[in-house]
Amino acid sequence: MDGQAQDEDSAGHAGGATTRPTHAAWLVEHLRQAVLDGVFAPGSRINEVHLSRDLNLSRTPVRAALQMLAGEGLLNHLPNRGFTVREVRLSEIVEAYEMRALAEGLAARLAAEQGLSDATRRTIEEALAAGDRALSDGDAREERRAAYSRTNRMFHHAILDAGGSQLVRDVVRLCQRIPQASAHNVVAFDLADVRRRHEEHHAIYAALLDRDVGAAEALMRAHVASVELSMIRTLSRRGRQG
Amino acid sequence: MDGQAQDEDSAGHAGGATTRPTHAAWLVEHLRQAVLDGVFAPGSRINEVHLSRDLNLSRTPVRAALQMLAGEGLLNHLPNRGFTVREVRLSEIVEAYEMRALAEGLAARLAAEQGLSDATRRTIEEALAAGDRALSDGDAREERRAAYSRTNRMFHHAILDAGGSQLVRDVVRLCQRIPQASAHNVVAFDLADVRRRHEEHHAIYAALLDRDVGAAEALMRAHVASVELSMIRTLSRRGRQG
DNA sequence: AAGACGATAGGTGTATACATTTTATCGCCC
DNA sequence: GGGCGATAAAATGTATACACCTATCGTCTT
Image 1 (spheres, chains in turn blue, brown, cyan, red):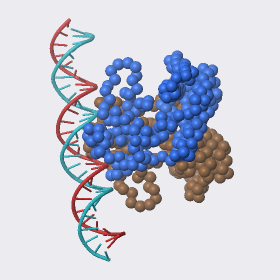
Image 2 (cartoon, rainbow over the protein chains, first blue to last red):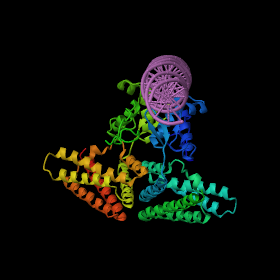
Image 3 (cartoon, rainbow over the protein chains, first blue to last red):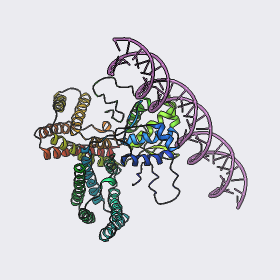
Image 4 (cartoon, chains in turn purple, green, red, blue):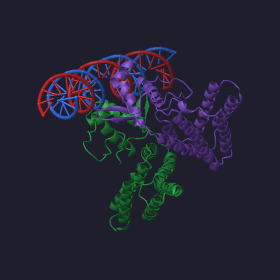
């Protein structure tokens, strides 16, 4: 749901005439989301002809998109046998969170080292305030969840940007790109857990303001690890029930 | 240098009839290495027509390769403006090492948790023995460096495989894929440093055998960080001299 | 002379045609 | 009835054609 900056358009850099994305670029977004949402069975082959017909396009832009996704690692490619959806063991989902905890921790450390720009500060404060509101209001659960999900993304995104490292951003992207494990499908945690983690957001922000490098990294690591825990609980509960 | 398993051929999985790679797949390897070696100027546009002519191919396989590399993040793509070589700030090289230290540390931890298979044990012991030989022999410097470089790769690769996480491997790949910073061009360290790091290899292996999870992770992190230090020294020395 | 406008050449995006390889089908033999 | 091989169907890899976009250069206007 963040559109991803593989083609430098989607993220509208404020200003003016963003060139209209090409068919292939649009398809990359579309297909990536489809794979992450588990629309295609893991390991299944993707038929270029069928896909092209369904989309009213020729094979050329479809292949272009598939090739990019293969480069991202979401699809595998075998010569003369086309593209298949990457299969992912359950353990990889856990490992992804551990890796992500390290990566986001590093981002927090870098952000603390460099200090936050005014713009970043505003963004984070906005995210925190929106989170406060979303969690205090007593309204509908689903709506609240969606609202908080947005502020959560905003917070993490802001810190990744503040860290400034393209590489770290790429790593986090990689960790979130596990087929069939799109956070959307899984994040339905206890309200108490969400509240606690929101408090952690506040603590992380405080550490960043203090330029407390060690605390920023440690807190962020623990924070993501806590998300991992909730995730594991949810997964195993589902596993038991079917 | 490691061929990279984006198309699942290159890495010969032991056994039998590996299907001959397609032109595009071969091009991916070729162009990736070219970009990493800095053959193309950073930020420069890549002209599909010229490249096709030089390679005696049509634009189709060339584009296929470029799209995959764009997916990997080595190239950027702008609609109607084609592919450009990703530019990388110097700070990113450092960040790449920090990220890699965390990733390989995680791999070591996972390997320690799971324990080493007999095959892995053999591979690592072979790498360590070969390293011992390469560092004790008194022969030509360049040859020794190349020999040790191989054993070094073998060691790290074995542990990544032992960790078993595709994701962690991908992250390490990502960290090594910094255009113009191919390790090859830079690794020319003091013999004393290399000897010390080889000792660290031994220590890491011992921790893995002990199933000492914490030590394995910590030692590996420190080990990669030490490489980072040597790298920084080399870079700044070069920076000073020209 | 500086800047706006338009023509033109070059480059990319997409469609289509064809070659090669893989996969499925059918018939045959055991 | 089941396995094996030839053949046909389908799918992928590559080449080529063309439409559209971009960029550059020259011209014209002010």
